[in-house]
Length: 265
Image (cartoon, rainbow, N blue to C red; front, side):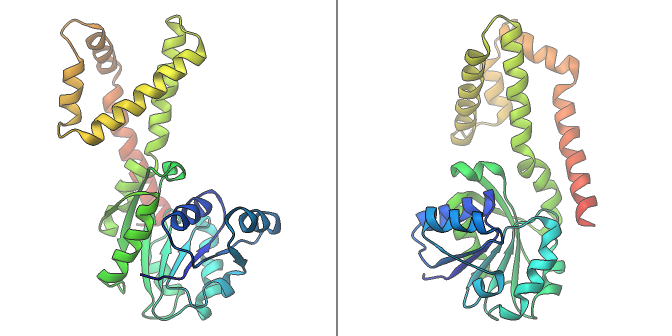
């Protein structure tokens, strides 16, 4: 399917999507980027045309809005009059609801809200998408296919976006937090920092791959590593005594509440 795609915003996530989409064989891609130096960089690196926002969306089938949440309103105001009636507008701005976007674009223009996460930079992202009121299934499928070039995609009702944000949007930070603690513990136990980092990093990569490819639950996989009275058992018992598991679950709930506050839901 031949698509014209406009990427509004050439920051890290905008460039990530641009690169993934181009690598998947979509050649008709234009970018809008307001900073001249960054625009030149994107033009030279990816061989794409860089235009102002209003010009970029002319003729576009899919418009990816990859700007800061506080900039969404002004960007949509710039492009609303140039959008194709058949276009689908995809917002990757955290906390911006589909009804807010729908109110800023012409009636009938399809809208999709998407929450990405940072591992999309290495092609291992997790995107949660929700269709707006005027988005037909066929256009939602197009968006899912496009975003899957940067990782995995799940479709959820918009009412679940705050929970999704708390698990996968903020989730990479939880993993990095765990990695920090593992490295600190390894150094305190006698390792040098470089070795501790290498051990923690590959352990997390391997464990994540095992979890992704196994039919077993995380609890079952954990039990398989935990011999009675062994080293892992000593660590898990300490985690439980310190409330680590409960703390992580509480943190996810706190992130979901904050997401709801920010989006006004």
